[in-house]
Structures are given as C-alpha cells and as structure tokens.
Image 1 (cartoon, rainbow, N blue to C red):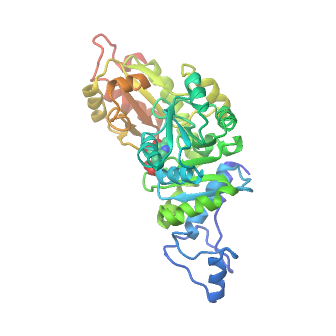
Image 2 (cartoon, helix red, strand yellow):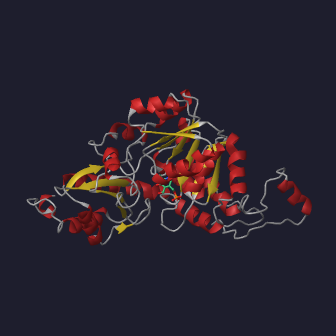
Image 3 (cartoon, rainbow, N blue to C red):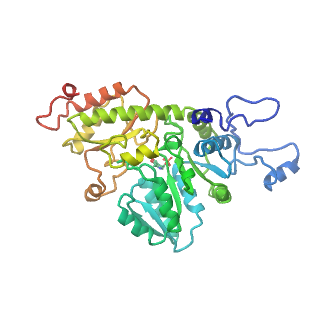
Length: 410
Ligand code: PLP
C-alpha cells in the first residue's frame, strides 16, 4: 500500500468487540483490568497480549507505535518494532542505552547532530564509563579515523541541522557495520516520507515525533524503530526509566500522522520554491537547501530521497550582523520565531541564539554556522505569502549599501 494509505489506516481500529471506533480513543487510564484475574496474570506474564499499566504499554500509544512502524517499514512491519517515548530526546536516550554498551566502549557521534544529542552523550552517557568520539561524516578522513577506533555505536542524522547536509545512509550503514558498530540514525529532519533507514540496514531509527510527524506544534514525543530482537531492551527502558508518552500526546500524534505524507509533500515543494527564489535575491548571500544544485549534497539527496529534499532550508543574510538578523526576525509577520520545525506553521530559528548558542564564534565559523545564518522550517502557508513576508522583512534592512530593492530584482 502507498504511504498515504498507510498513514490514514495503520494502527487504527484495534478496539475489538462487536463495534470499532473510526478514531482510536484516548485511553486515558493508568491501569487496565480484566473480568478474570487469571487473564491479568497471563498479561503480566507476557503469555497473552494486553495492557496492564500505562508505563508498560497503553492502547493509544500502541496504535501510534503500529502506525509509525508501518511508515518506517513501508507497510512490511514483520521483524521490526517501534517504541514510543515522551520526547525525541527520551527516544535517543533509550536507543543508546538499548545498544548494550559496556564500560570502556567507544561511541562515535557525528558533529552534525542536534546539540542536545551531543550534550546527552557528553553529560549523561559518557560519565557511565564510555569513551565518546566526535567526528564529521562529511570529512571522510576524520570519519574513517574515528571508525578505526572501533566504536560500538555510531550516531548520525539523515539531514543535519542547520546546514542541511545529507548523509549517504547506505554508506553510513556499511562503514559502521564494517567497524563492528551498530548505527543509530536520527531521521527527524527527513521523516519516514523521505527515507527509511531501517531498510538500508540501520540498527535504530529515531524520530522526534514532536516535529514533522505530529506536525502541529502541540505534542512532544519520540519513537525508536529497530529489529524485533531489540524489543526487550527498548521495552525495559520505557518500563524502568519511565520516559513514557502520554495517551493524549499519542492521540494528537496519531492524528497528525494521518496527513504526514501530504504535509511533507507540500512542505518539500514550498521549501524548494523558496530556496530557488531566495538564491536569486541580492540581500541573501547564500541558501543552504539540498534541493539546489549549489548544495554540496544535492546528488546524494536526489538519489536517496526520490526527488524530495525536505521542508527545512537555511539562508545567510548578506552582510548582516546579529542585530541586523534580530531586526529582520522582528519584522516578520507570518514566519514565527520558534525553535521547532516540521510544523504546519513556518518557523524561523536563529542558530547563533538557539541551537548553537554555546559554541564560540570560532567554533561556529569552523562548523559553517555564521552570524548571518537563519533556518526556516517551511509550513503549509502559501509559498507566495511566505516570500512576501520575507521580502518585507528584508527590504528595510538593506544591509548592503548599494543593494537594489528586493522587489525590483525578482
Ligand atoms: N533530533 C533532532 C534532529 C531534533 O531537531 C530534536 C529537537 O529539536 C530532537 C531530536 C529532540 O526532540 P524532542 O525535542 O522531541 O526531544
């Protein structure tokens, strides 16, 4: 079945009995009971499927897990499992701990991942007695040198933030496995619509469902999808660490997920249109979007994502310093200044102020994150309206003395 059909139906109508509900209800109950105690005993012992306590499993959360599993596996879920957690970070934490690392093991993390992921590894995981290596996958020599140190786990993102570097996922799987490591792919920026890393051999795929999957800026969540053999560890981490997703958030996410393919399709189209336009504006120094031939990873993105390039782009305001960028953001009327992404609303983030705030200017310069860079997560608004908003916010800034007015040049 097509992913659009799966998104609408997968996980639904599990209620049983002589009726079913069109929409999965919010099972807002901590505890579940059965007419006969023997049955609860069998559920508790794992001899019969069922629900007992919502920290272990909850029917609404289970419906979301089935839906995500269907999307991550292209409708062929046999041999794989999905487990939901209270946030994307909780999902990453669970996946890292599920990898069965022992004291002294090495973990290799890409430098091109979400800052909190690196902070989690540095501040929470490494102190447990693990060796953390950081390297840039886009620097093949550095990456291979780090792999040669034989990590047990490698963490990467399918599309990086905020420069939208695209990883060759098949090669990442091959390299990690050749080094004897498991590979964790955070595919949040791509969503299951652009790629399905599990099919390429990744060991853990993480989605912060807070982003594209829920898509409406109203529900936190995270999901790990992995081979069935990982189920006991992923289940135990939820049950014992307790980072559960609430049934209401699961319901909102399941609701959002139904329109995921349509939303992402549209967001990709709009982002491409915006990127092409912005690239021609004199007030914009540079646009970073894998859909543009000028992007370093255009070819791999085109091959890997079947002609889609994602709903996020970033761009540099020509000659702008921090105060110019803030003034530009203050003038925006439609694009909201917000740290998230993947929502129906367009959200603009200033990495220097938010995601990369803790880096020194020199460190930022090395990673290519300049003071004039902003990231735009394109929502479902009409792209012409978004362009008009960007144009009116840019025009008064006129950071280059002799720049022609934007309107006259496009
Ligand atoms: N992974 C990526 C790529 C992210 O951008 C984020 C958050 O921005 C996370 C994980 C963490 O997700 P959450 O905020 O749901 O914990």
